[in-house]
Amino acid sequence: MSVYSYRAYDSAGRLTSGSLEADSLATLERRLRAAGIWMLEATEGRLERREEVSRLRLGRADLIGIFVQLTLLLRAGITLPNALQRLSQDNAGTKTGTVLASLLEQVSIGVPLHRAMGAYPRVFTPEITAVIEAGEISGQLPEVFASLQAYFEWCDQLVADVRQALMYPVIVLVAASGLVLMLFTLVVPKFVSLLTELSLEVPPLTRVVMAISQVLVHGWPVLLGAAVAVPFLIRYALRNPQVATWVDRKKMDLPVFGSLVSMIALSRFSHNLALLYRAGIPLLRGIEICQHLVGNRALAAALADAHRGVLEGKPLSRCLAAHEVFPQTLVTMIATGETSGTLDIALEGVADYYNKIIPRRIKVVFAIFNPAMMLSLIAVVGLVALAVILPILQLWNAR
Image 1 (spheres, rainbow, N blue to C red):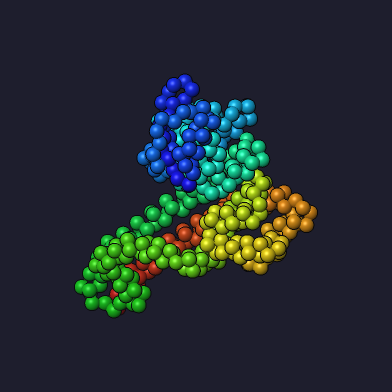
Image 2 (cartoon, rainbow, N blue to C red; image 1 turned 90 degrees about the vertical axis):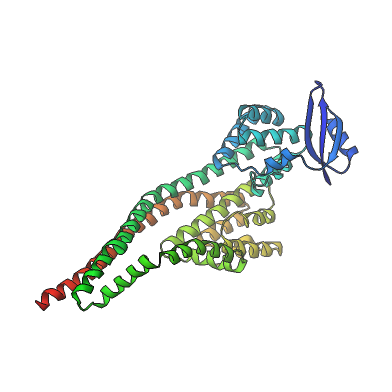
């Protein structure tokens, strides 16, 4: 199947252009004629405009706005093409308007909405297109858009909670780093010169502090180069699937933060699978899509193994129980849903469970992290102060 760029005119005599996938020019002309459009000319190949749109990205807030408005318009009885036309006009001159106008071009000539969205993977993820495809098949597009709206609003709230919790620690961490850097680069070097003049015996702790100061003062080009190079090396190493899986698994084992990392990944799994399954996506296809949405390679690898198990006829709960990354609570809830034939309700229950527990855990984690960071700062300043005081005490005792 090829992509054809065409110029045509509609029933009102207005010129229009666009691009469409078709087996041949004859098929293209028939599809345009069925949509009330008469083709003037067509050439094989994508339009530059469509390529530009495919490179656009929309934020989560923009997607939520699209889903909210489409839900309202479709529930009011407005057809999908008219709804897209209204929204593209309302958002004219913005990225959202450009994307909606491109979708309108495709939908107006008979392309299903999920296929039109699939041409722009940077805007509409496989999760979105799969759910919308199920909604088109079942005739429940308004309900599907409402579900997508609720899910993305939950994601937005979760990100907002994490950012709010991180704001104070980040400010304190930056200030503390500046203070420690000032101590080691300004205060300690002057003290070292004083000790050299007095020819005092230097205690081990003071020697350690002096060595750190010398490294920071004279070795800063190397440290700066390492600070720039290390992120690139880490990114390169994470291209290896085995390394990425190992790192993500270790993140889940971290003290204090590990449980939060695990819960966020599991919440994305439960929310996405609940959304897909409720929309009518087969369980196997839903698990396959979720592998790319959980944001954790270790969990994705466990889901790939569970997918193979379900394909062999095993219950999902038993496949998940074979991996320690899935807690017993989640496995039990899913097993109950499978036994009672209400897996969709069970998945929604798991998602609601994480809706409640994750915000609480965020508060608990940062309630522990903030005092720990302050104590660490006090300890560093105290050690530097002690390293300065010890030689002075020796001088005092010598007198």
